Figure 1 (tube, one colour):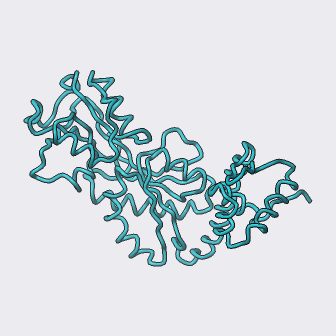
Figure 2 (cartoon, rainbow, N blue to C red):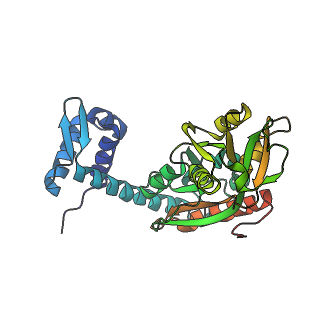
Figure 3 (cartoon, rainbow, N blue to C red):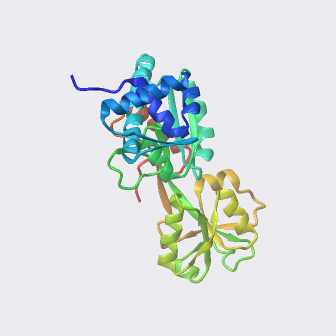
Length: 310
């Protein structure tokens, strides 16, 4: 029978890769450092490759070691899924779900999603991680996160995406701006104007960049917002214009804002929001149930239901 690494060996390897230190990895795995070191050396001997470069005070994965660590994470996550499936088999959604949320949507949607979710599935535990959409997609693909919710992943065949809503995007301008007295403008009105956006890894950056190219507006290369709140503050002090998603507007804008919100009549100012998970996940039916509930909640929040186009 060909050699197969043990669960513990893979766990040790992944933990060393995450910590970069044998001692810290041993603490996390609740074993002695010699035990962990011996098992990793044995794993290297059995595989016939060097997985870890050992340097004084620091260890780093070799190129092949990094690839094996990535594969080991998927394997370990699959074993966790088996345990969760067994635990939750009696109640459809059970056990725990590590849910990743995009910061431009999740914080404003979860207050509506979590109460009915806990009512329907009281045994389910949700662990929430907030990160930029591209990082969330990577985390889901690598098994660090079970399921994500945010802008639909672009051209990722290894992910399943279920759209739950179509969210409008508004143009925010200072209350003193020449466009502030309008309810809608055409793209041509933005020519030469300064557009600010979130930093790299956010899909809103892509939206603003496309709008800038189409309208002749100027993308503010000298400013990358860390959050929608930061963008809102910058617009309110007349540093430029920006785009704001509908649910954020509903949650955070008030009547006395120093910002006016407009629509752009000749621009498709919307974005699709979806739950997404690994196509290979054994818990696909669980995540589909979660997405179904999310669509029901979103349908109550937005004028249009889920999956409506045009």
